[in-house]
Length: 354
Image (cartoon, rainbow, N blue to C red; front, side):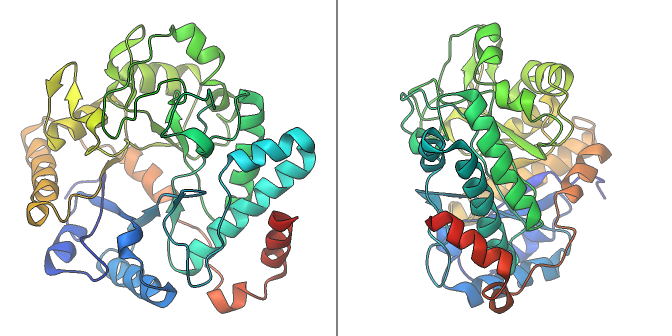
């Protein structure tokens, strides 16, 4: 058995199928990601997550739950969190109150998810708001890297208070390019010096506290011809070497258009995953493929990685596995009914509304 379970995958729908159960039990599976289609209500979500963890107790259950337009669960008591730009605008009026409100947002976000069994959210966005990117837009805190860093650290503190790790994205920065990496391969022609002096500053300033990072499916040709998530220059030389990052590196979703081509060549999900792992990713995501051709892309990835391991094309990384396990919450969550009467949670809700 591998000592490294690098794949984060999804399940087909709101109820586990036999194929879902088989994939969750696969030794290459280390986590799952939830989407809106998995949501019915809180009781259902809590039961679904428990069923998944019964198959693999150390499964890392993840979700994209940032606030604003990227929030998977919005009904049955979940707080509607504002987009991160809201806190950047608040900062311009009252910086200290804005940081406290961002901490409150992190606490509410994490405590509500954890009450349903969810371990981890891919937040915060550290991209700068250049006013160019439609896919980032109001998901960004601000144009100023200093403001982004302080608000992101504040949000991460709130997450940590509720027992949740966090993930800065999309390294080294997705905000400057107009193209959406979900449907294109964006290219940022700026120099390494320019990017590190601006977009990547939050990663340097948070290097001792960031628990995870997700690189962008963006090509920075003056640094490397490969997208950042497939680039050992970006992930090993710069992120880990120059900036000193020690946490988990997730690939962004390998089903996105920005991950389907490396150096102009179309690649399979398995080839993309191997390239990401070789470049320095600890974990790889393949999303929204469980309903494609009965989940064949997921099976091909799991089997392909297993075969690559057996043939020596890929070496399992025990350090990556330790980093994955370290993202799992170390404390028991407050059940929802208790949370609703918990003084810090009630104060955080007040702070968000003030």
